[in-house]
Length: 238
Image (tube, rainbow, N blue to C red):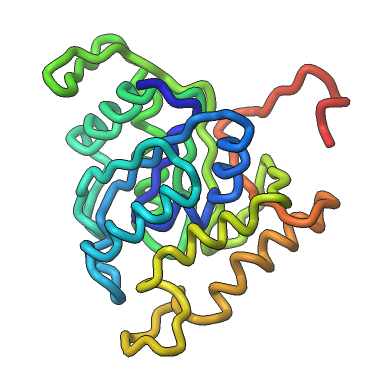
C-alpha cells in the first residue's frame, strides 16, 4: 500500500496545523498521502478522544488524504523505545513512503519533540533488513524513506525548506477548523487553552503569510530537513 508521503503527528491536528496546505497541494498534484497519529490526544483539556477521532476523520476528508491511522500511544507518556519504534516501523514499511513528515524538532508540547525523534529514529531503523516486523500476519520488507522533513509548530524555528502554498491555505484552514472542540469558539463552555484563543487561530494564517512574504509569495509553510536538500541546478530554486 505505497504512498508518496506519510505524515506523522503526535496528536490529531498536528499534521493539519504544521503541513496541511503542503499536503493539500501535493494531493492536487497527484501525490498520495497517508496520516498516522501517534496518540488519540486523550489528555487534551477540551473535547475527548472520541470527538478528536471524529474530527480527525473530517479533516482527512477535507485534505483528500487516502488513509489515516492512530497508533494509540499514551498521550503525554509515550517514549522513544524499541516497542514504540517497532510500531512506527510497521507503518513506514506498510506505506513505503518516499517522504516522511513529522513533528517539530523542538516545541512547547513535550510530545512534539518526542514524536519527532521517535519517527526519525524509526525511519532509519526501518531500512535495516535484520529488524523483522509483521503486519496482518505477513512479513514486511525493509524500507527507508528518501527524506524526512519536520514541520514547524508553536515555536518559530528557522526552516530549511519553504513551500509556496498560496492556493491551498483555504483547504488548510478548513482542515484545522474541523477540530471544533480544540480551537476558538466564543460559545464554548470549556476551559481556555493556549490553542483555543482567537489569536492562535489567526496565527495559522498570519504566520503562513509572514513566511510567504519572505519568499515573495502569498502564503508558505516551512520545514526543517535532516540532511542537505539537493537540486540539479541553481535555476531550480525560486
